[in-house]
Length: 294
Image (cartoon, rainbow, N blue to C red; front, side, top):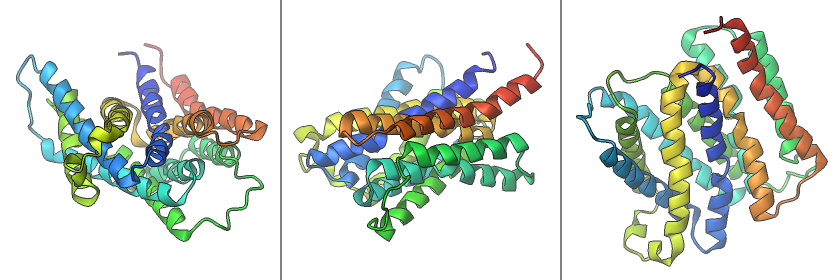
């Protein structure tokens, strides 16, 4: 595949994550808890992974090296758990802003792991992303004194977990097909979420009451699509650049909250979205200029 397709995959995967907070909020408005919505997301995601694995199993699938995928499953599960908790205390837009801190956290983790200093273009990109975040989330002039400390704590914990999820996808598992990788990752995540969230949705009737609709959407956009794309693309772009490219999550989240939750939207927020997009595209553009043509 051409080199440019991998950054696009990361950006699109992150855009899928951008609609999760709004859909969890909609599930809560429909009478379900955040815990039930998150559990439905991971259970449905695993079932969809099973179906995808079955229909693509035209040849023998290798499971060799599966323990290497445990961290990816662990951190995607922890991201869902703590992010769901943050939405209990925070409006959707602020929850996304805190989750968005994974950009610089992911950069820091990558620099520590490979023992390097951030590149100038990466630092400049992070500055643009931070400035755009403040604008796009509508935090300028907003009184945040009433936000409970639990919201801040859960939101930042979600950012750390997501950064570790991106970092855990930096290497491929030799000989393992993408559907197999998705199956194992979603299985590990489903087990963890079911143990700590609301496994009782399987027998308390909530699925039949309409939870299945939210679970189907959350499982598709929160598990199947992003986990698949991240597993394919991150080894090619690196975890540091993947953290920056994942900035697409915030503009999508703000747009979804405005359209579906009717949260306010201003010209400053629109300007912030453009600043974020500029910060996201800058390192990709610099990398493409550095590489020789193919």
